[in-house]
Length: 161
Image 1 (cartoon, rainbow, N blue to C red):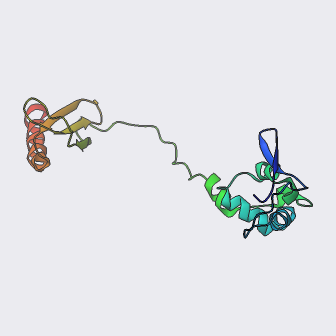
Image 2: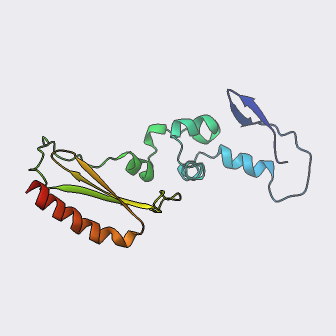
């Protein structure tokens, strides 16, 4: 044991006067206390990194003596700044559906752990962009995708001109 703490407001604070049972070990209370009382910005940043980037206001409530003579607003973390940045949004354009069958969205999914009664574990979907009509084909194996795409194209050409 290198020190004792007192709970206050959901936090534990190291007490100024240690109630230590002297045991041999590499950590002494005085070394921990001197570190926590230090008001070096590098020490603040070290704890900021060690505790997975908490806000400096929260960190100052955890280690009040670490922030003696420090202005919280002057502390900056590059990682935190980049994490708050967002990508530029795409330009707003009204959506205009294309002509019938000029754009088709497709997805292949599988294998499913449970097969159908006809032993099929994969499926492929085709969705027309304009009408949102959807076709679903069940597959036994993924290698059947090429043939299914060809069959779907023939279906569209013959049935919908």
